[in-house]
Length: 156
Image (tube, rainbow, N blue to C red; front, side):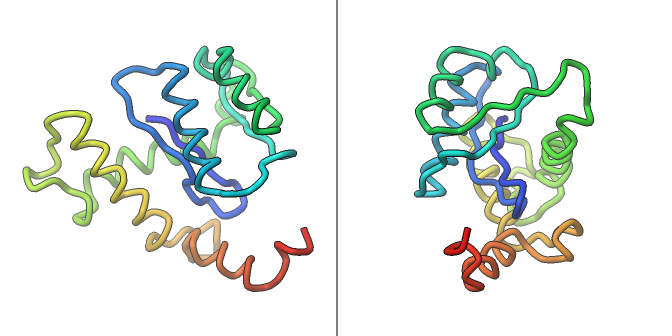
């Protein structure tokens, strides 16, 4: 599983599931994030770990095409990737506990398609309903809505 998290709002803006950790997995997640934002990403920073999929030619070329600056953490330093690791831990824990995303068979998925459907429901719940302590018990949707309604986005 690969997720792209907007650090400002904690919104999951891109994701992809795969049976293996490949460059196409993370490029697809990045492409979803670019599509989700419908805006110029020039000047943004995309922080990742030092995995081979994030240092691949296809990923670094796509980052460059989007005008995004790459930031790669140091090998073995979990503090560099604390937010990403936290999201993955929450995903693994909550996907199996959230009744809104459990499969009819008790959360045991038969294949990648079932996992993708459950993940889509979980991401929607995470972004629109789950309260985040880091956001003063608001949802990522509420944080972004407040930001855009306040006019700060136009000033930025």
